[in-house]
Length: 192
Image (tube, rainbow, N blue to C red):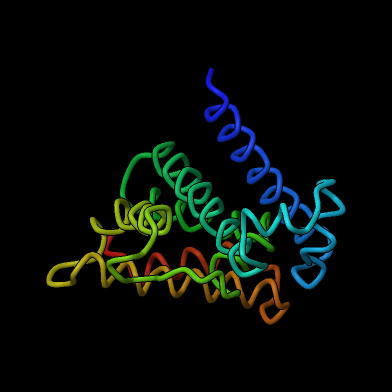
């Protein structure tokens, strides 16, 4: 292995460490606790080393969002592939989405609430974000209904899931009806 390859491997390892540490800190204490000073202390590198990887917190949030989008896409695909039938797939997909949001609140915030400097719904949208949307579209397109564009239906369904996730987390919805909300969403929107 050349010196250059070793340096690139070490750089990639440090970058993964920064992102993992930011995620851990954000999940434990919230994104306000994630500062470059605190991250540098936790990873035991100087702030200039951290800045050699990311220009600041915004880029770190973006990196966490991209990692989270890839994880969400994998979770959605795994959940949907485990059941048969359109209605069962869509219910399972909705549950998987809401479970991901509940289990990973700081990552979910990085993906959808905080400014990570990422473009959404544009040509320059990063691949992990496109893939997370594709994981929804793959299973929702078949239940969009006649004359309804599958991507448009997926956007509306996703918006409803995001609303449920956000309102539930904020304590704005009674906790006992979560399953009924998912079934109502599927029954009223999806032609399954």
